[in-house]
Length: 615
Image 1 (tube, rainbow, N blue to C red):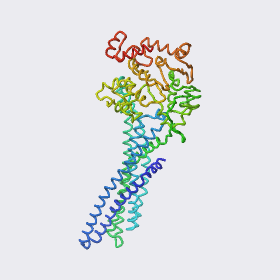
Image 2 (image 1 turned 180 degrees about the vertical axis):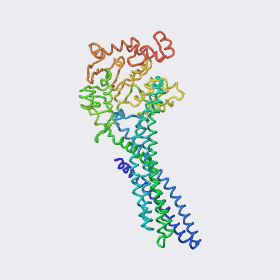
Image 3 (image 1 turned 135 degrees about the vertical axis):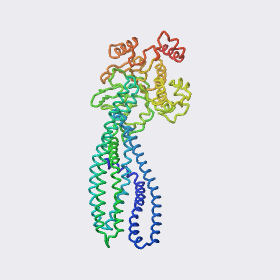
Image 4 (image 1 turned 90 degrees about the vertical axis):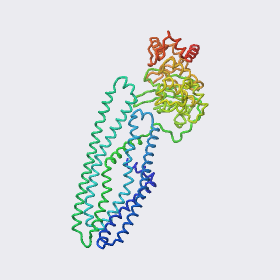
């Protein structure tokens, strides 16, 4: 399967490969004239001292090798260009395929392994593809030499060719052994890459628990087996090369012995030298195969791992007749939706209608299915049973790109790309003009902190916004959603991890964003959703309660219990979601020194007054 796929890939570049092979054949063919020149020198020039013929041969050889040099330059350029283009195409295919795969794949496959597939495994293909291209030239060379030595002396040629089957058997056996070990080595290196990426991503946790030495010890211990395996593969390659070299020496000795005995009127010294030289040239392709044994085996192992990724079928695909979605009005209907994850039911017969412009909050204990509903709405997964309809149409009837273009998402932990603030704001709408970007930034309160930065919107924020606070990152995420101007908005616990002051800035931005939009809010802090049009209380994947905040607080049930519990923990100074308690800032601002804080942060005071008036 892997070889077939590689052949298919090479066929796409057949014109370049053929042209490269032709120039390579020309290069090798010119080298095959050397033994004939030696034969003429030995059989004709030396006995007769014909210096005119000798100088003619010298001129011919200079011309031939000048031409060879020119062809070598062309061949080298074409070969390098072709291989580089093929590797570029493979990387593009892998990356494009990874973009098409569903979230379930990424939840089951480690990031480090994927990086290893895209970078390391493709790099290993280089030796394999180079060999595949050069084999055309090598087989041609071997065929011409075989014809030449049989033409010179067929008996001696048969003796010389007896060693070939042993050579190929030697390569076949060791190639299989090394290829198996190469596959194991690549898997181990991929696992190491995954662990390394995980450790770097979790470096704060590592340092906070003082586990640097432990992580180093684990990393070093994981490297040891790879070193042992690499040494083992190298030794296997050395054994293969040793057998090859021994066979070559024995073949040479037999050819010399038999050749000397055959020298006579029908087999001159010049014939023998030409024959011996041709056999020496014949050794080249075989030696090349021996030298590239490890790289070929690793290339095949890398190709198998790449094909394993490319054979993964995207779980979420556009139907052949999928339509381009226009601007949605925003009516959402969940009709008897059930969903299973790894055979474990998450949602059971979930039905809900959200009218255009409504704000609906999903609440409930952890694992009740809130985030699953968000993932289904975004069509990161498809429902197991039932349907989700937008404006009366099943969401599976639309192309994924056009459908998701109508939905804006603000997550609890927003992801920002390394680059500038402007780059992140315009991620969902790259062609947005400066006025639209400015307006979105002002609506999301991004302008409040950006104007204090030296580079303003051109400030580089580092990996995942490392130079920004949580509240600032959240406001950029909101501005990004504002600029996208979606018909439907999904807020996935957008303020649960923020301190009180940051939350007020963000909540004001969210209020602006939610205006006149259908909004689905996944919330843990129930105090932030009291003004929702509907509150859906989930329990064990089903709707347990449905109503407004006042309606749900008027009856005994899950919502009232959760709300009172959170109010109690807030009063005791414990944040249910790990954020700073109500009434304090990250620096520990308490009611006693609020006045000092508000003098330093007049914007926060303004928001506080508006919030109190509203409440």
